[in-house]
Image (cartoon, rainbow, N blue to C red; front, side, top):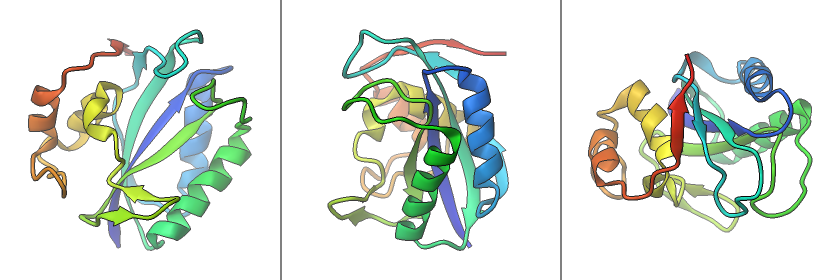
Length: 159
């Protein structure tokens, strides 16, 4: 079994319901799921859109990294993701943040997520789940990465 962390976000429609649907479908191949609290964050890239609801999922899978990528893309489709444009609004966005301690640098798959250390909307909920998880490239804990973070987009934690 591989320990994985996934980032989930939505800023279209019923955002919380979209994330809950995605988690339901993800349970098919991910076990022992833990979910961080939900946070509201500003959109990045194309900023003229609604705020996001974000969380991080921790779990275990027997899927390979490429199988997990295909699976998460199929879950996005099941939840109803529609591609509009790069950095555009999303019904659901699922990113593979970490896959055990693997480092993968392929054209269509980069693990750990390449901009993870710049995104508080990922690092803050990730810290809620496992602040001592060590980033395999930076060799820093999630807690340390949070302290190093300069960009702030989190607006509020949802109860």
